[in-house]
Amino acid sequence: MSLEAIRYSRGSLQILNQLLLPQQSHYEAVGSVRQAWEAIHAMKVRGAPAIALVGCLSLSVELQEGAGGPGLAALLAFVRDALSFLVSARPTAVNMARAARDLADAAALEAEREGATEEAVRERVIRYAEDMLEKDLRDNRSIGDLGAHHLLERTAPGGGKVTVLTHCVIRSLHNLGRLGHAFCTETRPYNQGARLTAFELVYEQIPATLIADSMAAAAMAHRGVSAVVVGADRVVANGDTANKVGTYQLAIAAKHHGIPFYVAAPSSSCDLHLETGQEIVIEERPGQELTDVNGVRIAAPGIGVWNPAFDVTPHDLITGGIITELGVFAPEELREALSATIS
Image (cartoon, rainbow, N blue to C red):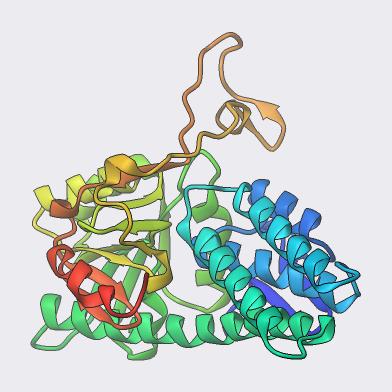
């Protein structure tokens, strides 16, 4: 059974608080948009698709409880304001912004129907968020399956098992019996890899080893890494990709060692409105996340800190391809492949 990051039933939303892993596996109730914003901003939940899901589902919980209104105009204003607020929690990831735009448009269209009612608009917004959750599950399966088969054809066409660095697509490779081993990086400074990815791998009994970020190149040189697969918070039209900081250096090391480098992301993370990665706004996090670990200071007092949450990997370093639920594309193929399906 896969680890659930989100548990939802109509009127109830719970998230796995990733800040407490691995000491505690605790699901925290999210009953309002404000609570969702705080959870996203504090990185209790992370990953661009999950951020959008938690944001939109928190709005559906509030609407189910009767928030917004009275009157169609007041209800629509409530929905728009709530979605705009959620977008501000972590602006680099495109999924929340796209979901906010599409969900607000869906609510407005429902309100324009002849005989439209508050109840109908509420139901439309709630159902839209629930459909997002169902689609996310389907997309994750497709990304895993498509990426696994593409990676195997590229790195092990004659059969046999592969060794993959980081975490995406690993589940599908494992289910196919073709994953020999996985290496996951700790992903400083927030240690999502050590806390979350490693927890998932152990939970699902996938053979894996944790390494420090600074060990990745050595692992590629000495531990038989077949491919590197990372996620993405935003992929722009030319294929440049923003992902958690440290991804760029993985891509450089992979190219030096001749190892295919893949980006796995749903089409909802692709932003064709931006031409290059230079246009992506990079979120900067508090310096304390770097200087402290679990509230204990580990850095010299008085030292300056630069703490960007993301870096941008240039498209020419993505040598394996960009894995979406629609297929695996070379960076130069992305715009044409997706322009008909996303806006």
